[in-house]
Length: 121
Image (cartoon, rainbow, N blue to C red; front, side):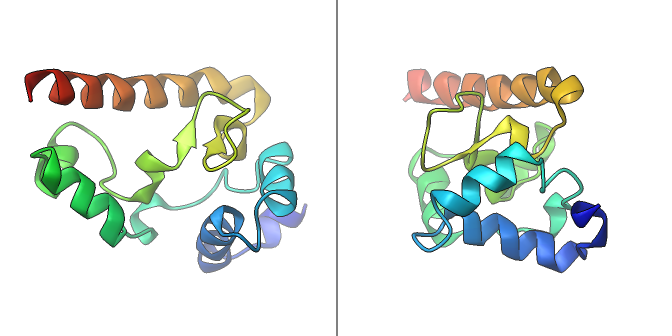
């Protein structure tokens, strides 16, 4: 019920707050437990300066990410299939229990893309 009352901009705020020192680890765990980011619009997220610099360093442009079917936002960098990672969101933050396999596949695709690019370099 709480998730349904959150605006799209409040969800973006929750996304970044849960990753900050202030919101992590207590708030982040609640976000993951209740899939609070399930309805987040990825297009409202940014691509942070750090992630943009990382992509540039390995030779990936924003357009390349979009062409491969990724959002080209921070979402692709801050989600993981491993629930024990403290500095990223587990897929449970974005997918309900019955849909988590879909989230795991998104993470695997992104990891595979990064591995392929790192192997080329």
